[in-house]
Image (tube, rainbow, N blue to C red; front, side, top):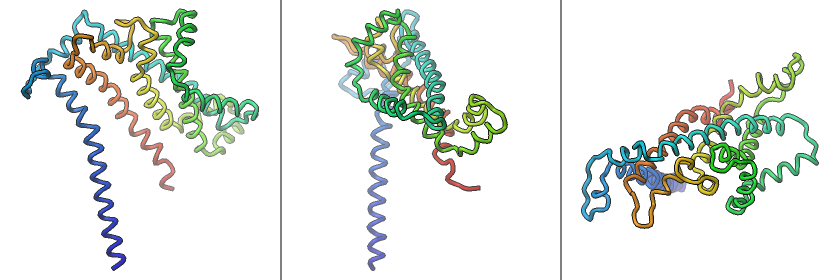
Length: 282
């Protein structure tokens, strides 16, 4: 009887957990589906008192019209993401390898780790005045290069620490064997160690890409808007004092979600491979 009651209790708990999980998934997916549905509705259907569902591409045609800055903003966001991801992959993998495999003096390592942990804790708004003055002195205000640098500065500590974790999971004998065979440290890193941490590279690329794509504060303060701004600032500009372009906002949000979904799908198999690596012994 006690075993039966225990199994019954576990069944109830499992059912409750499944219901909570379904509710959480629905709470995540339903707003996205509603946004996509609104993007195909004319404004009169959205703001009307009655529920009228139709189909119209007017929101997309208005956003993609030649005089609309959305295409330029979309291109800016893509360049920011590509630049940030590439820099974080290069310098993050180098820093992660150094932290994991090389002997670093404690007087250098401890301040470095403390600084790495402290940077993400600083509210970006506090740094905006100083960063704006610094970027202005180098002529980086109003362009994508400055935003790439800023995003890299804030995402690089996480990328380095995550890559360190992946390099820590590799057997030290691999690097030692490469060095014994006459390979230099750079060759051992590039030809032996780096190919084995592809799941880590995919994880870093996915995380930094999403964060750079969704970044808003620096895009708002470091650009003059219009064709110089990223997509997040362009979507926010659709909220005007006397009008809110709901349909265009939904269409822009749908367009903004597509690249992130594609990146996640492409990188998913590498991330899963990293999570399951070593789970099954040959």
